Amino acid sequence: QLVQSGGGLVQTGGSLKLSCSASDRAFVNYGMSWFRQAPGKEREFVAAISRAGGWTAYAESVAGRFTVSRNNPKKILYLQMEELKPEDSAEYFCAAAYTTGAGSFRPDSVKYDYWGQGTQVAVSS
Image (tube, rainbow, N blue to C red; front, side, top):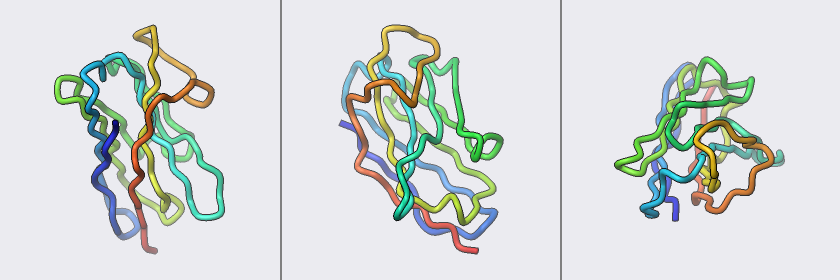
């Protein structure tokens, strides 16, 4: 089970940090990703991180502004969002994919075993 927190309303240029807490003791065995979905649009990939955190990947639209990280002992995934823009407004979801390797994975094609409940991010212009 993944439980998300954070999010809210922020002005353009502001920052927010999302958290995703896992209840599974095997959190370290999961590659983790963030996705978002804006009203009327399809869900899109935002960021991903490998099991041990040594590999990360970002959508081009957020690269350089967002940072994905994880704390395995605490079983928490984070998404630090900086320089937010109105087009970042969406519902954000964390997702966990059981991966057998410690390195990179295909966040757009891997099978996700768990999803968070979603959290809203709204960026005002």
